[in-house]
Image (cartoon, rainbow, N blue to C red; front, side):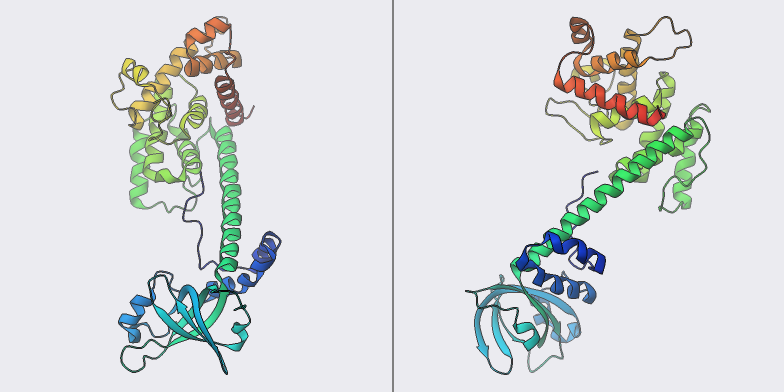
Length: 370
C-alpha cells in the first residue's frame, strides 16, 4: 500500500512529540515556520477559502480564518508594519502586521509570505477587514510541510506493515479453525455488510467457508484501496477456485501478492494482466475473456498454477502433499515457462524468476507459519 497523494493535511495539529521529531529534520531557517504551522492547526482554518470568495461577501465570512500567500510589494513602518501582499490571483492586499509577527518579515528582496488572517466586521462598501494572526516565509512553511508529510508517510508505512504482519499471523493461526473475530477492524458490521458476508460465504464449500473471514481481512489489510466489497469478492473467488483446483489458498495468496499486490487492474510492461498477471495468450488458452475481471482471472491463474504444480508432482507423496521443491519449480514455470525450467534443469538463472520464486516461497512460509 503506497502512501496516497493526499497525505499532507495543512491543518494537522503539531503535538509536542511531533515537534520533537520534526525539529532535527528541519533546516535551521525552517524552524520559524513551525510556530506558524502549529497555529494554523489550532485554528482549523478553511483551506478551500480564497480572498476572492471573502471579498464577494465579507459579512458572510466574519470570524473565518483563511490563509493568504503572496509576494511583498511594499512596506510602510509606523506603529505597526503595513505591507502590500501581491497574491497569485493579482490582488494587492494591505495588511497591518502586529509587532510580534513583524520580526518574521526579514529584509529580503520581495519575500514570499504565508499569512493567516481572520475576517473582521465588514467596513464601508465591500472592503474586507483582515486581522493578521500569524506570518511566516513560504520557504519555512514549505520545509515544515515537507517534513510533516515525510514523517506521516513513514508512520503510515509502519502501520500498514504491522497490519500486514498481523494479518499473515492471523492467516497462519486460523487456517484450520473458524474465525470469530471482527473481520473489518474499525469498519462497522452494518446490515448491508453482514448480508454481503453471508452472500459470499453461502457460495463456498464447507471446506473453506470457515476461513473466508481471515482471508478477506488479510486482502483488505494488504490493499485497503479495494474496499470491503471488492476484498470480499476476491477472497470468495480465491477460496472457491483454490478449493476447486486443490491448491493451498495460502500459496495462491502469496502468488497474487507477488504478481499484482491484489490490484485487479494491474498491467505489466510486457502486457500481463490482472491479479494473476496472465499474458494474453495464456488467458485465451484458459478461457479467460476478461483478465481484469477478478473472478475470471483467479480461476485462470489458480487453474494454471495447478497445472504447473502437476508437472512436478512428487509421485511418492500419496496424500497429494506438496514439497517446497515442487512449489519452486511450479512457480518458476508460471513465471518463465516450463520449457525454461526443463532447459536449465530447475529454476532458471534469470534474476527476475529467481527473485519471484524466492519472494513467494518466503510469503508462503510466513502464511503457513513455517
